[in-house]
Length: 289
Image (tube, rainbow, N blue to C red; front, top):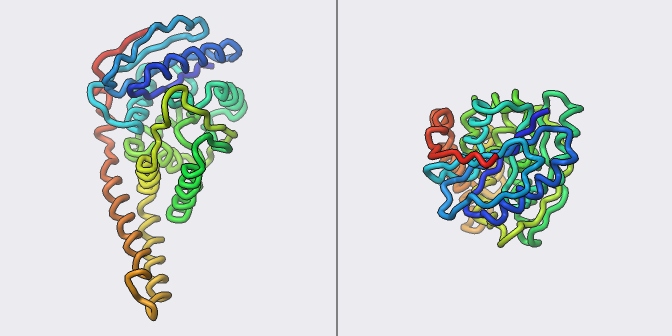
C-alpha cells in the first residue's frame, strides 16, 4: 500500500520539522510506503530545514506556491498535484502543527485495508482547546446540523481513497471547503475516533473569527437546503412573534439574514476553473528525499 501525507503549511517551520520527525518514527511500524507532500502556502519565512531522520519515509517534497491562497485551497491544490503526479492508494491530509496526531496515521492505514475503496474521517472525540473554544465548536456543529441537516464531526484529518479524490477534484466546492465538499460527494464515509492534539509551538491559529468563517464556508456548500430551511424558519417565527413584534424579537431574523448574506458571499469562492488551474500557482518544488 502506498500512502501519501498531504501537509499544508504557512510560517511554521519548527512545527513542521518536529512533525516530520514524529511521522518518521511512526512510519517504521507501518506496513505501508509513506510519502510526504508539503504545500508551502507562500510562507514569508524559510520552510526548508535540516531533516535528518527520514529513513522510514519513501519520498518527501515541498511544493512552494507563488501566492498565499489559504488552508482549504492549499489542500485542494495538493490533492490535484498528488492525483496527477504521484502513485498512491490513499492520501491523508493533516495539519503541520501537531494538532493532527501522527500516531493516529496507523489507525487510518489499518482501517483502510479493511474498508476497501471507502474513505475514512477522523471524528473528533476530544479537543485540547479552551472551554470557550470548545463551546464555540459545539455551537458550530449544531449550527451546521440545524441549517444543512448534515452532521459534520471531522476536519481535514482524513484518509481519502483515489476514487474520492477524483470526485472532489470534479466538485467546485472543494476550492472553498474541504469537509463540506467531502460530505457532499461521499454519502458513505467511515469514521474512526480522533483526539485533537496540542500545537508543537505557539498558540492555535484557529481563533473565533476563523472558526466562524470555517463554519459558514461548510454551510455554504449546502446553501439550497439552508435557504429552504431559513424560509420556513422566517415564516414560522413571524407567525410566532406577530403579536409581540419589537426590536428585540426581530433580532433573530436580522442575524439569520446576515448569515444568509455571508454564506452567499462565501459560496462565490467556489470555482472549478481555479481548482483545475491551481497547479499554475506552483513556484518551485524542493525534493528533500
